[in-house]
Length: 241
Image 1 (tube, helix red, strand yellow):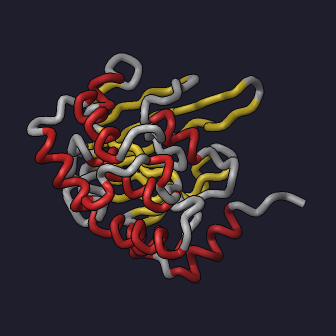
Image 2 (cartoon, helix red, strand yellow):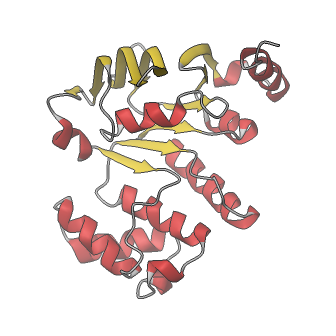
């Protein structure tokens, strides 16, 4: 993280509990503007909960969260205008067409020159010729392309990806991986959770491993080989016998 970079995402002592179960156990996180941070961890590590909190979809139990300098508790609507979210859930309306979905979200976000922006974003994700098809008829991979289009529509400075490759076939997964590379080389801040160690290490300026709701490892991406990452991941997430 550059010493001169602004902070896009910051959490201090972030906790989230569901009844007696602690999903996040005091997460301290800083992500600089323009940085790509990849978070690894097994199922139940707290990855999705963390993304949901940062995306204003879940309230933290305790701790502080600031996104683009804004306080999560008091400035949720302003934060939502600065972030784009892609997860296993597409947040798309299956009975609407590709175009109608993007038109709806354009109105929600007050996107200027809506028609031009929709055309640009459909071209970007390779769906310009699918704009009149209903979302419910599309494959999982094509729906995920549209979910990325939805997330980018209002040109957010911060992108939150929660295992967006889940359930994709090889072709769709390859598209997503290549597309993520273009996003992480630009001006945007990217926080991405994944099980794919190889792709994550290739893209990340910094890697973090979560286990049982806590940060158990953190390092610069370029400081690790893939073999070292596999070994570290296995060691950090090993369950007691």
